[in-house]
Amino acid sequence: MDKFVASARMNQYERGVHTPDFKTVIALSIVLNVPTAFLYCIEDELADKILAWTV
Image (tube, rainbow, N blue to C red; front, top):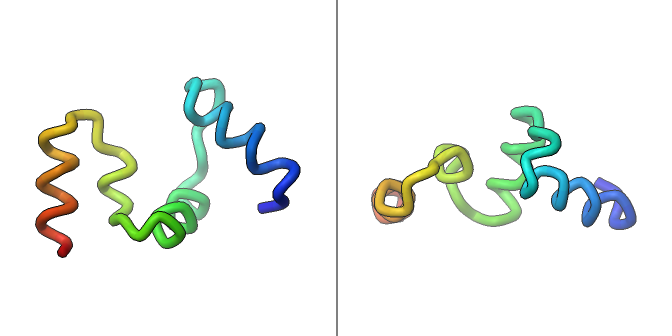
């Protein structure tokens, strides 16, 4: 992802304007070092358990 486009695109994802495709989710999970399920998790407690399970 181009640096000039990345900031605007991430902002749109965060605001719910656009949703990343699964290929992008995989790339984000690799960069952030988290499982893809973590990025789809809404509940904080479940997100914590997902991270704990993958360690």
